[in-house]
Length: 133
Image (tube, helix red, strand yellow):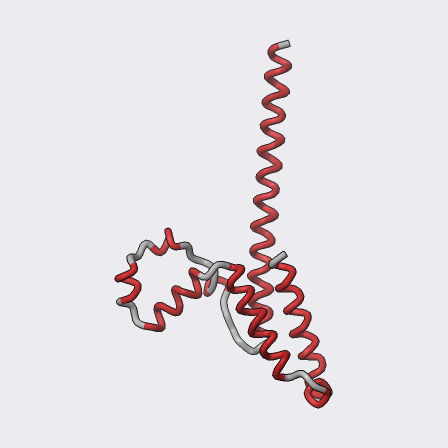
């Protein structure tokens, strides 16, 4: 009986480990999908960004003091800021950019000429909002 109990316990641990790995893989897939949605949203605004250009670096990986960071030129600081930006923040920035553009081109005159593009912006914004849920 002790062996059967031990085997059940081992099987339960393996099941829980497998479940945790599956959840982790799903979370990583969702994160990668949301990064692609951010890229597509900016692309619809004619802004080109790369997948490794944002939300791709952690503070631990940076391994730089505040003084070292402050001594960098502005362009390098901005590049690092984009890479350190959490994905949720990048998503919010993209939503704000889309909203500003939608507001700029709202109205019957613009929608007559840019209707398909306005619809694309709305769809991209909705997809980004789902990433925040």
